[in-house]
Image (tube, rainbow over all chains, first blue to last red; front, side, top):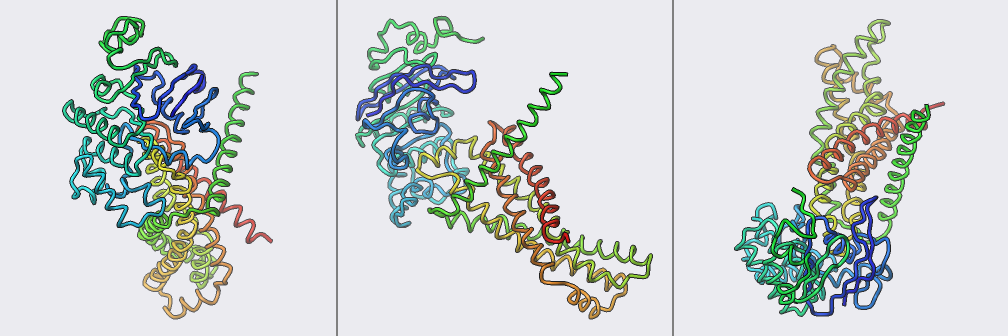
Length: 246
Length: 258
């Protein structure tokens, strides 16, 4: 479904991606782990076309994303941003139904769908007319999740879905993501360094370090791997091949 | 010596690059104005924010400027027995210069800063990226409605400011300087020509375009964090103000030089 081949990206002298190769089959939930600043977000943004790779190709359903209609490509995606990225000037339901109303759907029908999606992520209809600033962090994540799934996308991206949430709310969001991905049969890609998210969401895990994919495997394989990078990361050790700045 | 010359060269190149980037941004904005989709809801909201809500500040600025202008012209005119020119000079001064320039500068302070801060915050909080992933072009959704709204509403603000400014001069002229009310108004109307007013409105449209363009340009290029948004806001107001004054000179030269 999604294939990255030898993707490089540099910002000035900072070579963030140094040849990323990754394949996510249709219907699979892939979680990319790695420390801060290792290029996880850049990888995700490169697939969405928000960042253009210097070298390499990215294909979605065997189509090169750098060619063809970008809007048609993006209409297949849903995305949950790290901070929610809800539009401050719009109400909750207008945020959730944004794509639907932009494609010309009748307002009343778009609102009904938005309320249904809000209910799916555990929010009551009375939040629909509130503004994002009136919601807690956990509620904003849920609204972001509802917006990501509003148009029933084939592919959903989750950028650090549990950042800033307490452990209980993080668990709730992880479970919601897993349920929704399974229920919709969507292909999912999540970037996180939260191991509870990895165990809850992942079919397969990829470890990104120094701008390349160091290791891929299932969650069970991750727990038993001898790869020193993965071992250090999942156990949170300060010593090992991954340099920890003190 | 070489280092000094190199620093001048670097600064020159940076200025040229900025001019190029702003010109390109302006061209893209105009290009997007001509192609659908057009976001009416955003446009109407921008008209309210930029135009309607700027009325008090523009009105008060014009009122006090008109009053002060009447006092100054009276005091200056008294030196050569030309006090009678107060109504006509107040009117011409307001509609040709002070109305558009002061109105433009006040709107620049209020609107360019607000647009830059709003779009800069949207960039920092990934709302611009979210727009893209929702198949919505940020130039069309954010820039075009604001630039078009400012281009259309600032001339209206200038016109309202002109009227209030002339009224400010009238109030001071009648109550403080002893002018006959009917004669003051008659003098104002008699000496004012259509092009005096129209040139000020054209200036207003150009200033409106500049104000919103600078707000959007610096907002879209905002750096990370509160400091980045703060810098973008400051740069937008400074650039818009300087460009308004420069454009005012060029337009005055174009409209009124023999």
